[in-house]
Image (cartoon, rainbow, N blue to C red; front, side, top):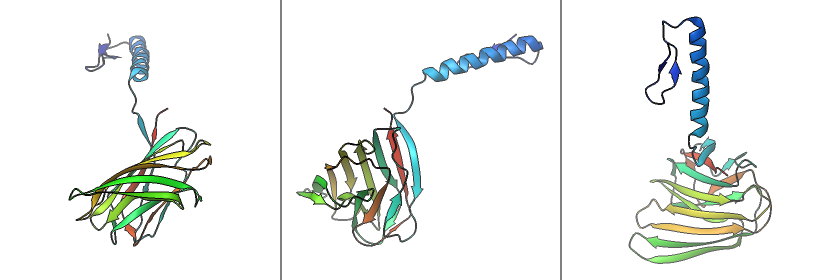
Length: 201
């Protein structure tokens, strides 16, 4: 005689079941698991790639990050430090022209300033690194599609006298990209993990 699991009430055979009863219970268990898992909600973000930053590197190339599986992506960095205070630039593929962006910056003392990229060689203010840590949180829309790539930035300067920054921009072409490169404006990066997530379509 089959019994049931405590959480989903899946049927499972007992130790006293006859072979045919146990087989029936196992078949019912498989059907119940399949039906339950199929109906469970799935996460909106899926980890696509994880890459550890090396030691005292002047740039980090991340390959095979984007594909036709997802239209939109998030890039995050956890941990890591820089040898000095530096902005982090984001370059898509080998493209070195056509980057446009605007950022608003509020210093920790309350002063508001602005910065911009106009036909730049990369998104020059995509993140920030210091001896206190790395802050990088970027969303990319349509990066693999043959459309303009839209970028949205949100990060904090990890340094005394720094600021919080938000901004967005686009890459003025219709190229499909799979790779990107992160480069500090000065100094080197050490440690930390780059994670690329895909937003489920």
